[in-house]
Length: 206
Image (cartoon, rainbow, N blue to C red; front, side, top):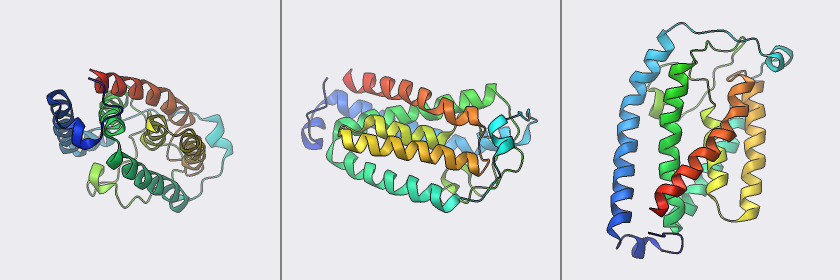
């Protein structure tokens, strides 16, 4: 079923669309329900401290405000786009599901300790994923960078895509300035995002 040109009203009339959308929402709830226990597990285990040439030469600063000044307006704008476009919503929903599942796998397989001189990221919405726990070892790959890049891939307007991709680059740099992630975490994120976008688009077309 093609959903690209369907409004929500018409898309909802297709049983396949309803099944994919409802199953995607349920999957996200299950992921969110399990995430806090998962992050507590990875935070408690021993990891490897990587030598990062970039971070070693980059003084650490708290730039949390700038990070969320980029991330949350972009997210709000994207939600506004989702309300008007059922196809984008379906691609983003399943793309983000793949993103979350892949991060759980890569973080499990690649145990890392937090970078030296990490400045804790003051995220008011982190309670959704972390609860009240301080989590610093959810490293490879960068969820913030991958999420914003996925937003850019899902958008259809070329100008909007360019703006979001530029914002993604700035966000990645700011995460490094704060020493929240290793350079590899940030550089790998867009590659993974493209894979998730492709998979999400495949689900939306079935």
